[in-house]
Length: 438
Image 1: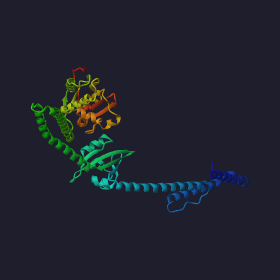
Image 2: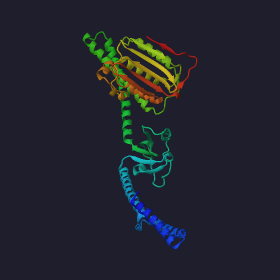
Image 3: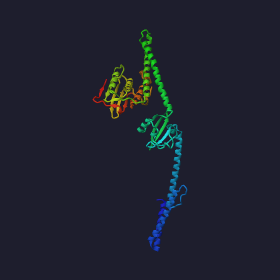
Image 4: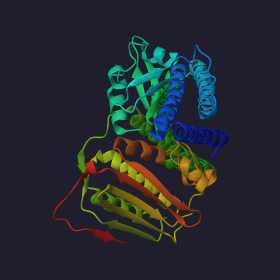
């Protein structure tokens, strides 16, 4: 108990003592007690009234000069008020600094409520999205950005990958939008990637056009090289160089074909069709092709744990499986083994190619699907690899709403698995699961 309360209790006890003494001297103790306690209550009410008056007018009046407990209360309220004023000034200062920083940012920033109502946005966002202050505050962001891709993005919930929108009239721009949860609110970032998108489009067009233009000269070169190889009048000294030129020209032709295929996949914005594909039959034929090679792993196993068909583009599904199996054959020694597996479950369909080859170091796995990326450049060139196979696999899977996972241990082998969504499966009744080994 503090000194103020001790003094207040002592004063109350003194008042009661005076009332008892007065009653003993003059009689009627009860009246004396009532009168003294009434005076004490009136004093407390007066102090309470002064405190309330000051709280109402504290911006214009000084605090009342009260003693005892009431003085402590006034002092405590004053300290709380001063602390509140300090924090208020600090918050206002931070808010002004935040607004200055966001106004200087090259990206647009919007603050959204949990229901995606616009609470605030900076000038960059207003310029990019054509928003107006005060008029658009409180509006739902979907009502102002009317784009099918954006509507699907916000319905899917916060995602790590931003959605890219073709936005703006009359000058078309590309905007990358991303919504980030921030407590009860959401933060939306908008970045103008028009320059990057146009450069990427120019790069894709250049690769596609260059590949197309190289196809005809390579056909002519291959034709003349074939004639030289079959010409008996050519000196035997040239047989080796001509054979090497034929191999390199064929390698160049395969690279051009892969570039054209990759360009076609990148240029196609639509998802793949839903045509039934007999994955089991396709994989069985591919296994026979591998077994017919002169140089191949000793064991090639096919496991068909599902009779479901895959709904998609048959040429692209064939390209996916062919590239994964070809990679497994290239990087698996002859004493090794390859397992090709197709199965389905509640998550969808899965196509896996497992090998016991050289494996892949962990630091290279994230970059495997980059075009022309090779883990072992010397070995890849020797085996004729273009470095485009997994890039083609990645883009073909994206057109099917699928994804690729890679598990690898250096020196022990790798497993490449394609995961297709449930909507891409078509159950096939009356067919038993099969397995084959060789």
